[in-house]
Length: 565
Image 1 (cartoon, rainbow, N blue to C red):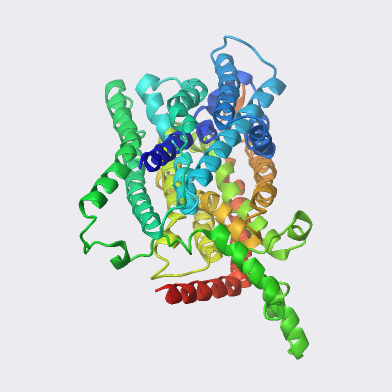
Image 2 (cartoon, rainbow, N blue to C red):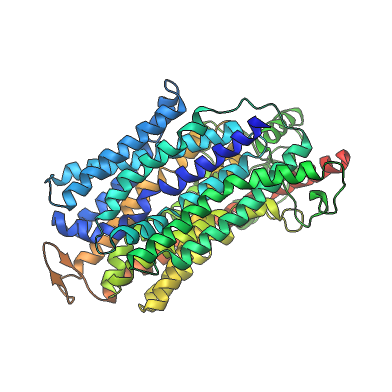
């Protein structure tokens, strides 16, 4: 029992780490001031945002560090990298020191790398302590990374709402403080024995309660995250947010106490009688199931040949669309893909295109949110917009776990959910292109946050299912190379359009030029909307090509459950 309670303390610690280390999401809150202090153009400012995203390319270094150092050491290395990177940027913003542009660029790169190190520590903790409920642990903790900007907005208002450079000071100090608070649970990790099925289902109930509590936290931050500039009220609201983050520590104890009280009573509230499907020990531990299916693939090679080869052998003729959907498509889930096979797969490049034209565009939009709001005369609402994007990104990440909960009643391939999640993005950008008023800006920001949040959280599971669980570390790192590439391309596109309209707009000249008016981002929104339609099309084609493999997997899962019961 002591080991079980400690693992939940570790989960809450990872939630805290994720909640306070998504420091790249508040860039737009202080980017305009940083641009002014450095006296740089919009293109140069975009390169600083790209540098933060480029830090993800060096995320592999955290895995290398874990080979030689314990988890808690890697955690503090990440914290001190962030302290150094953001701390020096804060000193620059306060005019205490002066640094050349190239050094500020390298500091942004270091800050982005520190975020990847924090993420790696959290992933390892979830995998080690929740082997049976790994997808739920990962989706819950990843979700809280999306709420960081809302928490920082609340903290900034509580300390000094008039100073945007406060965000950099908070980015430097809060992750280090969170690491200190999380240290004891991480050091005292339990040695866990395999759980019996009833314990796995009990843990599933705890995860369900924690997800409901997470939704309440997101709603709280959405409603109150940027609603006040009054210091006293903001401090009270920040205290309420921290209380909501601490309260999950109580949930496992309550569930264990209830189980002890009803141990000899067959309650009518049994999990098996519920209307949704929780985690099954033979189902959601996808890693083990996928390996089993891979061996089945090799034993039954004649039955699992690619569909196009079967059709070609039978002499059937295919149309152009049929050929695109069925040629060399995946015959099963979980087949391991080494790098050489991965990059030769049409399915991978469809997935890559869907990600870079969906989630990555959403990330670039959030990086430019400060300038977008400024150009539309909404500078006073920048903090509100950052909180809105953060909160809906959080909801999107939580929704990525919904398919596992409603699987008993509604089943779609996970690639179908990816396609559905991409739909709001083009709607948002075309709405922004059509109307530049405050209502359209708020609605579009919420839609983009919801869509990109879902994609970020669901990507690890999709990569594991399509291209093999054993190869997911390498393959997912290859996938997310699209983030710095997309950030550079989309950001430069937006910056060039922005700077081209500075001279023709009603601009304010300080240390750097500011573009005012709808024309500053109109063409950018049109291009981003068209590219997101391309991403949606790629995702739809990926779904059509993988639907057969997902359907086979679901049929065999149901068959195995029927045999068990």
